[in-house]
Image 1 (tube, rainbow, N blue to C red):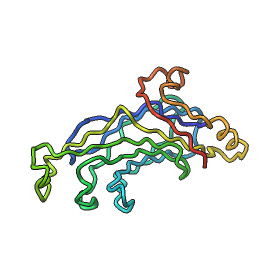
Image 2 (cartoon, helix red, strand yellow; image 1 turned 30 degrees about the horizontal axis):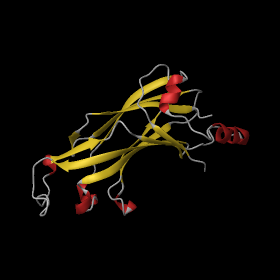
Image 3 (tube, helix red, strand yellow; image 1 turned 45 degrees about the vertical axis):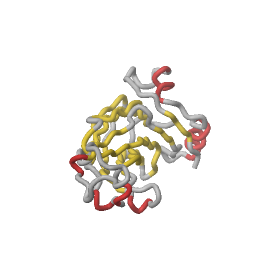
Length: 198
């Protein structure tokens, strides 16, 4: 089974200005001592058509990790507007928060993000150009994140990896983890979970 489980992720300061940093309050449970740090990343999808516009907004190492429930706030700068195609600044996109152990990603939480211009404009002409970013509001759809879990090898034992794949085959929602008491009673959002086998 996974040695680290994300039991809650709250989006702070939402909605916010496009230029404001992203803030996530992350609660996770560590079941056994880890010999290495956890690597957390925030990734902004700049264009649905071209992954070269994706931006890593922040990347941090967290450790050493004590056994039990842990909580911290992960803050990441707003995306660099010059790296986003002009036609993709407004509208719906995605922000991802990922966590890896020993360079192996084991959880990914994705949120839809809607960027809208706060002043009225002629729909046929479109918003003013250049875009005044101070008038762009970012709303993260915090109620419906999509969680994907990847089975990884936490130690050096190959049998442990096989057991991880078997136990994680169906996945478990955060709500199910709460019902099972796996999160120490922390408040959780309802999350959709996909178990992905590599």
